[in-house]
Length: 115
Image 1 (tube, rainbow, N blue to C red):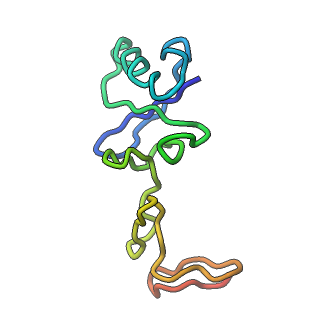
Image 2 (image 1 turned 180 degrees about the vertical axis):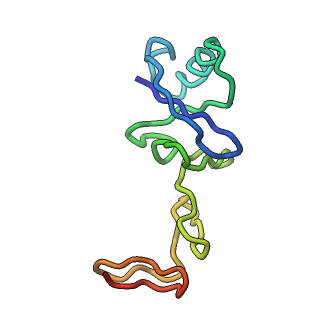
């Protein structure tokens, strides 16, 4: 089975499953345009990108609400806190590294707090 994510304004809106038979065997990247054409033939409009359930391509499996960076061609999580920044690997980084152990981030104080 192949999975396709509907992208609107850089945000995943939906993820559907397409049979391998309907997307040229399901092997990315050749399967993507075939799957996109199949989705369009069903009358389902929008921008659809194939996503890997195992994270074999496009960094991570696309889920509703995840973001898509068209330039880097990857799916990634939304920003968890306003103070966190996105690194070059599309991973959100806190202003200070998390200490060893069980901690939660306190955005108001910009610090890690032990449980």
